[in-house]
Image 1 (cartoon, helix red, strand yellow):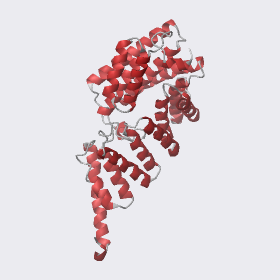
Image 2: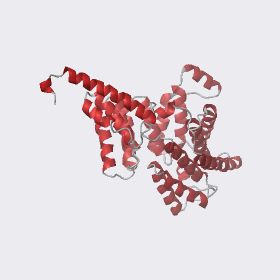
Image 3: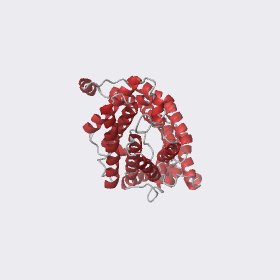
Length: 367
């Protein structure tokens, strides 16, 4: 089966996706990439009930539960693509039991369905693709939510193996390059001692080849194109290829205008590149979008935006502007005790700088 047909195949390779199901899936994916996880879950659950053996629908549902878990944990507040995201340095979160159970139920169903098909036909391309997606989702959940490193690595290896098999069967199946590409990039980025250990597990790493594979999916993939663009943003940012990262995010902003994370990422990328004026303008634009009621932006983390603006204005020497924004952090949407501690320390720095400024400014020059 040609890879492009994976997007249309149902539980049996001879079954073509009904137009109504395709429309529901498209709506669900739009909701998913727009952070509307409850709506996505509703639509994906409807699809799964209509075709219980379709692993793709179970994968969609599992992903929606996983990302809702991240939303509840406070992860989706911008800088999602940056290694500086403080979430990734905290202790393991306490998962919501219902979301965890629902994720594992959908993930296990996907794996059971596609592995059963593969036992009958090891060259079933749809099953290879769905199995790779399911194990990739399991790896992400184990790594980010449960912080179980070795089980996450084992699932990542399985995901890479399934999609590697698919790519060998059909080299034109560009969706199959994403997971092996990510794995190869990560392995190629590890210190030498870790690479040596992975070598004995049959894993080699090549950063540039990994990037090229992910780029192939972003350019020519069908089912994984948006995921590849997101992962490329992570990679480009890590490699300090800020202009390329911004181009990716700008495309995502156009595709999913109700998602507030992508404009925040643009601001963060400007900040990371040292383009502070552009970063300030981008953060202020998000505040304006929230103020005018832009769809999807009501849940934007105002506290964090004000904090970032406070940092940027302090760096620029605009102390009064920094003071105004930092004062709005406590009590604003998205605030938390850790952020308020950082905010209090920064406000103290600003106040001290203002005292020094006033003490060294001639009285006639004071406002």
